[in-house]
Image 1 (spheres, each protein chain N blue to C red):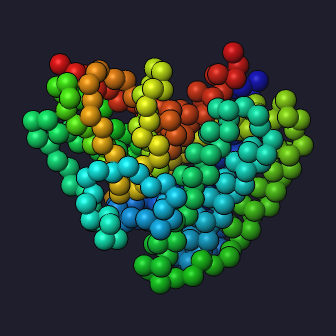
Image 2 (cartoon, rainbow over the protein chains, first blue to last red):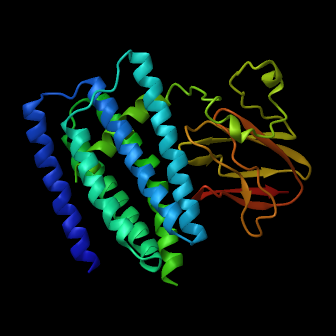
Image 3 (cartoon, rainbow over the protein chains, first blue to last red):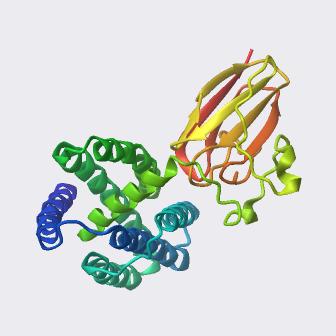
Length: 178
Length: 136
């Protein structure tokens, strides 16, 4: 079951990179303003998931995890906003942001449809799988594919920031299975 | 599925900007720390808190989701100061009994404690972040 889920995720990652290259061909490069929009939207979506958890969960550890996600992702938005200001750009809506939002609507519906009893597992399992997929995508696909040394370094530095979220989610997952 | 891409992009933005170590004091004003070392705070001037290490004063930096150094040997009664040099909130909490906690330390701020016994501690906001104080 777990392997199937991972395989699905891996498939999803591969699709992602195919769709990414399609987007990349249509628009050789996302502008700074569009990247800023994507970054802010992506973080807002993660905050939205955590806010659902705050409404639906009664589990202290899940609630604490959700609070950390809200706090950390708000910090990321703050950083992105500071950079946008420094660069003098206004975040610009784009196809990637739009598709992110439409995907998020589906996931939010799924989470909202869960009973109180089944919600915690759905939320935490998704967080674990999601972080694993992101880390794997950066390490195995993005870093080897990147030629630019600075970008490579950036991507390399991203992983240590993601792993604590995964480790935290896994601890909560383990506690819940007891 | 494009979520992953965007998260990656989000973290690129994040990494780009985190190097500047800018302080977002306004945003985190709600989490005033109990810093005893930042004497300028009353003047509303935010200056980077310097790492200071003397015979009886030790600094642990919190950066990239880690306590640095993660293990520190000190003498009974020494003061340990934790500086949050990360871009997110962290705290310092005694691990086994939760007998004390710093509460969230704002970005760029510090929290200090006189330590009298060996302690395992962690960040209660990021459970895998752990540190150790060894009292000789």
